[in-house]
Image 1 (tube, rainbow, N blue to C red):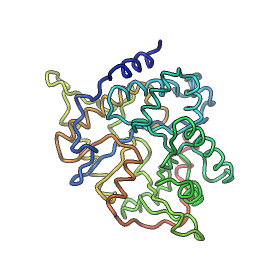
Image 2 (spheres, rainbow, N blue to C red):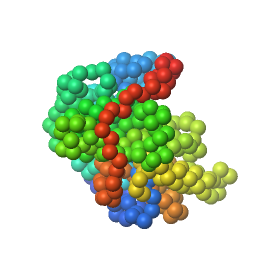
Image 3 (cartoon, rainbow, N blue to C red):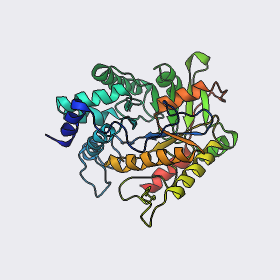
Image 4 (spheres, one colour):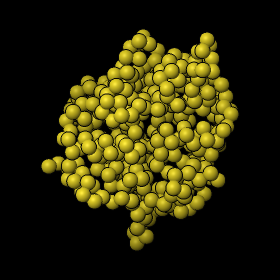
Length: 358
C-alpha cells in the first residue's frame, strides 16, 4: 500500500487534519469586502512537450535537460490537499492527468473524486493540452478541448468553467468567442501579451476586460478576460519550490531567523502594488509555474502561514482560491470593464524571449 492509499484510508475512517492551525479566514468564504483580497491560486504549468518528450516529462527522465516529473507533482498533490480542507489546487493538462489517473488504484481514484467534488481540486481549461492560438486550425483546437472535457464529464461529472491559456504566445479572438464564450467558460486568463500593450494596460487598469471576439455575434459571444500583470509565476519573493531562493516563513520566535513581520510586510507591499493596477479589490496571485509542486508540501506549508499571519495583521486579506472563485468575486462587484474587440497578437517580446532562452 502506497502513501496515498495509507492517507486515504485514514481519511475514510475519520478524517485527517481537517484544518491547519494556521487557517484563519475573515469570513466563511474567505473574502473580506472591505479589504484587498489576495486570491492565492496554487497551480502547475505542465507543457505537453517542450524541451523533453511527453513521456520524459511524465516519468521524470532526461533531467539533464530540464528537471521535471509530472507524476511526482500529482502524487505529491493528493496528500497535501488531504492534509487541510482549506487548501486548493487547479490542474489543466489532461494528457498528463489522464495517464496518471489510469495508474491509480480504485481507492486513490475515490479520494481524488472527493477532492474534486469538494472543490479542493478543480480542473481548469480541461483540454489535452494548452493549445497555441495562432497556427492550429480551429477544428483541431475544438477537438483536443472536447477530448479532455469528455473525460472529465464521464469520470467526475464536471465541466471546466474557466479558460486558462497562460502560456501561448499571443491570443486569438477566435479563442475568446469560440473556445471561450461558446464553450460556456465564464472567463479566460493568460500571461503572454506584447510588453507595450501590458505597460499601457497597467496604467489604464485595463488588464482585465470584456473580450468580444466576434463582430457578427457581438455581445452574445463575449467573455471576461484577464492578462496577468507579469507572468504566471508568483510575485518576486513568494516562490516556494524546494531549494528556491525566496525566504520561507519562519515563525518560531525562539529562533534567530524568525521573519514573520518581514514576510507579512513584503506580502502586503506586493498586494497593494498589484491592486493599484487592478479594478476592484480582488487580485490573483498565480502560485506556481512550470512543473512545480513536485513536493507540494513546501508550497502549502508557506502559504498556510502567509494566510494566517497576513490576515492576523489585517491590512489585506489572503485566501486560497481558484480562477472560478476569483471570477465569481469579480462578477459580484458589478464593476464596468473596458471592451476588447480584436486579437492579442503579436506577442513580439515573448517570441524573442523564447528564441533567446533556447
